[in-house]
Length: 209
Image (tube, rainbow, N blue to C red):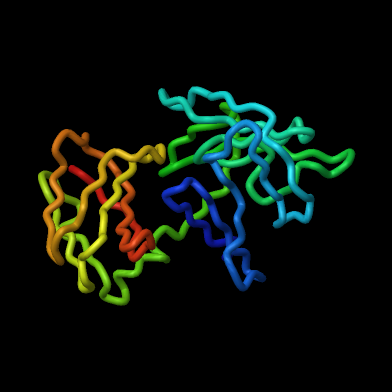
């Protein structure tokens, strides 16, 4: 069942497109600071200021927590989302919602020991290599892989993140065919984005063996 399409840009804004939408809707902005205001237009609930920002330790890394006022139960965790759940609005009178758990690649990063998580799939869509714009091969690889662009390479970058959403590498693509070396990256699963002029032309994941 198609639930929604989700994308995050380099400014830490997250956009969602539900089945009934005709355009992307701004859902989160993890770069907000105290005094900034976010408009919850998707839920028609108006605009609220950030009350305070702190952090939470998850899987050995600290992530920002953004708290809104007067919505004292609305808290966002960077890279995860609202602690009240992804697709529900917390401010509902006598009703409330809670995010029970969050997993990436079947690894639970947030929540209680007893937790049932629905599994959302679909990283391969948005993979624009189907149109022949870009390709990465081989995948998996142990030492290096090749990024091949079938468009002009000017102002193009490869951005690599780990499973926690932390950027671990950024490389300018100076030609239509560029080698990416693992260098000090440990074996595992990584997510990548190829950008041209600030726009995504391919996203996906690769495995370093």
